Figure 1 (cartoon, rainbow, N blue to C red):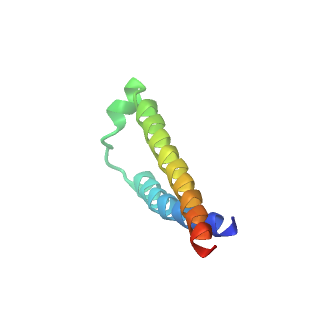
Figure 2: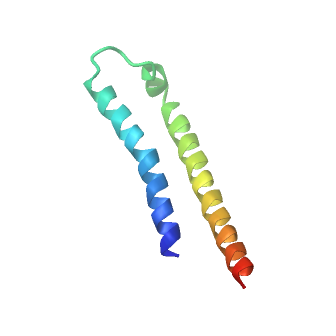
Length: 78
């Protein structure tokens, strides 16, 4: 199980670090952003929710896949 947490932490770091960089660049930008129209109409929340659902689904799939592979590795050793 600790092996899974290490992989999950690595995956999370790989997903969060580029996002943090993008957010930092967006905060420093003085020009209007492309998402201003979405923000004004309130649709940006739909976009963010969609991205969160997709990422959560991918993480859940990877966790399930990791468990299956670990189980098959144990069966192969026996």
